[in-house]
Image (tube, rainbow over all chains, first blue to last red; front, side):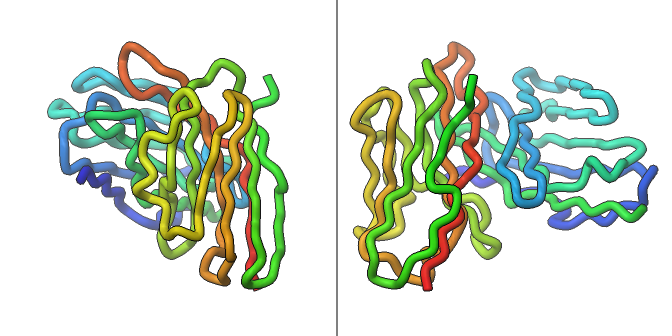
Length: 111
Length: 116
């Protein structure tokens, strides 16, 4: 079945620095979704990418969908303490509406 | 919109007891998903419904787990009998059908289950 892998599993960042987390799928995806879960909270939808090579920005967050639609990345610039949490990517199975979630990248920020 | 509503938010029970978790999806959403999250296994899909009909329950771990959706605004996940290894956070999520495939899912606040 489809697998979605994320790296790194943990990201420790100095406040103000940039970092990137990566998502790779074993199969081509129709779209890729990103979610953020704050400590003690629930996953919250951030964005969906649909087109090959698509790039979308949300303030300091930049999301990219690979040309082959099998990988994606999330880049955060000038990391702030509000960025703390776990970032998940998720891709739909080809035949139905369920999502395969990656294991997530857990981000901690050093002030 | 109130979002996805789950109850209870916390549940502590003894091994062998029956546990029922409840979920009210967002009005107008026709997909409902039940997930379980643990440190060891991450976020796992247990079962999902479309228009109140179970579509895929391959993630349900054992016969001790069952889920129902009697109408568009209510679903339950039941564990009977519960075991300590069932301790986890259980999320309910809902989404709606779209022309471009899977739409984003909206998660409830979760139920933190502890089985002693």
